[in-house]
Image 1 (cartoon, rainbow, N blue to C red):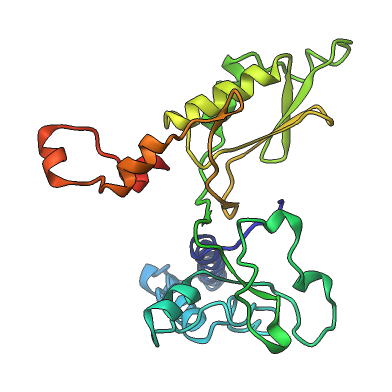
Image 2 (spheres, rainbow, N blue to C red):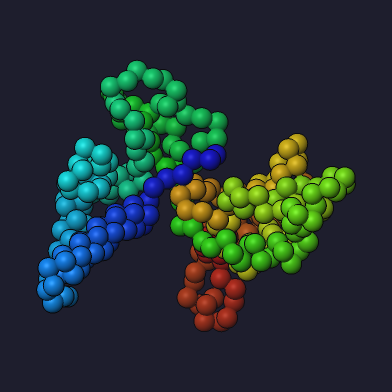
Length: 276
């Protein structure tokens, strides 16, 4: 779906950005005072290193994500103490995702699983009581995209026949609109071939394996996403209505792929990572 998860990286980046902006404002105010009062500018007094340190420490200790002075506007319960009762409870806690809605409301819709959650959210694991359905767990094989630059994908599209909107303003021939992270980049005449090529490049690791490709034939749209926070799940590759994976590959996995003897002999390794 179009939903995104806030991971630790972007959350800390936003917090650091806010604290750094506060630091620069403090330096600017001190510099203004020095100019107005005809005083000498002292860098050690201007840059207060505790601004960023204390801000990060406060947010990580209390879980209130945001400025200490604006605690009402800050998100609550973002950082938590990791559950270490059992190994299973630790894994469960690490894969937990929280919906930022009030627990008091009796709205049923946000608590229910949507069709697009298939294979991404566990349908069984959720707490009882008020938090039921609002606190979900990721399914075992799903992962969250870290995010990558969209520039290499746009460069590739330009090389492979992407026409700009200015060139194609009055064209009558049917074209497919190409979107990258929701931005309309242009149109393409042969979308089927383009999708095939992008998938080949993704499997060869020439472009990031996290890039998702969606072709909407009815709407004549091709949507590419490279942003962070998307929930991804593994799928079997099908070519000419046949699965590419065979029983031979499954047997190789079950027999123990990473045998040291095979590695020494220079044989090709068949581990779970190689399969994915």
